Length: 178
Image 1 (cartoon, rainbow, N blue to C red):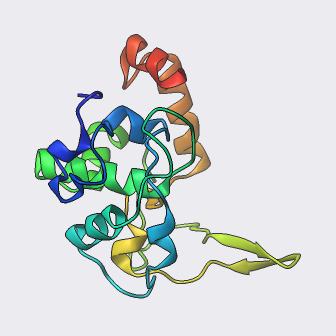
Image 2: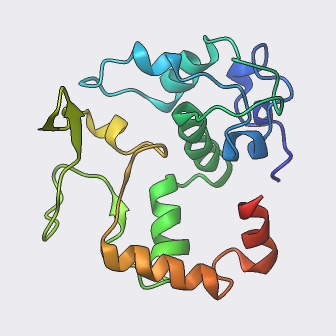
């Protein structure tokens, strides 16, 4: 449930995340810090357990629900929660429950080894110049905060689906706008 506390699924953070809910993570109102991202070696593969422990080592930025601060780490935790609850990797859930049913043919979890026609890589802007994104390990490239690749056609399919009450339904769509 959206109002479940995340420590139900991530007991490793019970001392730091009391009161943080799924809804807080989804709405970036959890107070979960991205500081753990600053300590990651993006060339190293991490287990989900390691990522949770690193995130739980950081104090909350504010009391859950008291403010807003974009949190990539919060979305990483959401992907891990999905895996723990369903037993399936979040990318497989997206493929089977969202992408395929909506006809999003190119949508996928990032993979450096997959052959993807017309793939464009990520870029970053540094000192007035576009540069290729830095390489990241396969596990970090596939986390729920940064792991998706979609085509313009897929984004169009997603927009049409949302306008027709799929996949969230009218109530879910309304909740997503709040």
